[in-house]
Length: 155
Image (cartoon, rainbow, N blue to C red; front, side, top):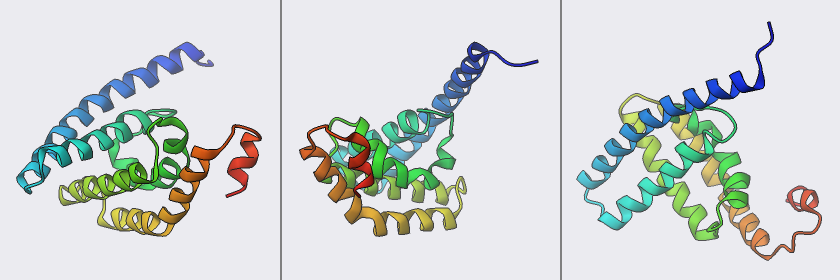
């Protein structure tokens, strides 16, 4: 028997609810960890806000992915989705998000919630792709909206 689109969407929404509840606890623990490391309240809030957007918006945007699946999704997030969806996307916000992602997934690895190998692979992607992401967000800020597909091919 074939499932209806409505049933599939309900299952997706229920999965997202479960993931958001788990994410709320992760974010609380991450905030506590950053505070205990001596970061200022402003810096802690920036990192927590960046990660909240990543795990509760991006990772749940099309599929219900838990935070532990996030290290492998960074390239598409910072190189495409964030640039298109976050109205505040800029070279600085790309760098800020990359720093937050590294701190968050180091935190996750310390708790054995993700593998150290996945975190190191993510960090290599960030290091390699950062110049491209910064160039893309700058071009996107100046883009006139013409030939949308061509914009992304031109990279």
